[in-house]
Image 1 (cartoon, rainbow, N blue to C red):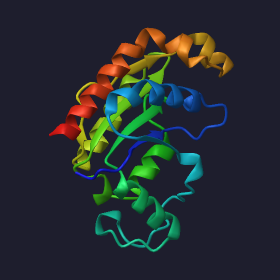
Image 2 (image 1 turned 90 degrees about the horizontal axis):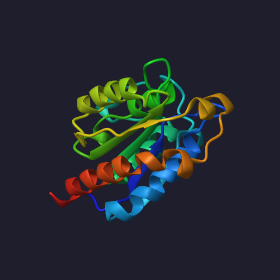
Image 3 (image 1 turned 45 degrees about the horizontal axis):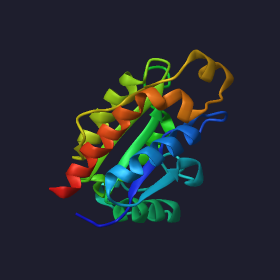
Image 4 (image 1 turned 60 degrees about the vertical axis):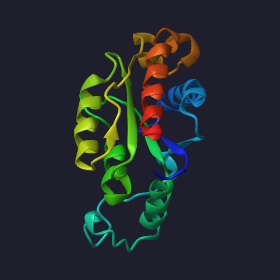
Length: 184
């Protein structure tokens, strides 16, 4: 297992997203539990055009500079925390695209899924879990759902510490479960 950072990947690039505030809060909660550095990765910072590689990702023969850089970033990571909203019962296209740009770089690495939405995002977490299993990732069995209030969804504003505090123990447990994956 690599000794790299754990990448906390923000699953949304949408305007007006709550992902930044939620991801920062999640990272703050998890940092003391994981036993290794966390690095937040904003997919907005990674320009990964759809389907612009001539070869299939499973072959690992990347031609585009952005894919090569993304590959190096993911390959150097020890594991992942995916923080993602639920959009219409699924996870965002930007996250799917970021995953599908690569293949082997994800394999055999531990991962934790944290979803959020009005109902907690359990449908998107299940879909993401299914995809990550195809990469043979070592998934934490619990996927903490963060239930947002109607007010947060309507105003697109959140005080994560105040609103998510009742769900903090689930995040701590998720990070502790992820930490055990590094001990094995």
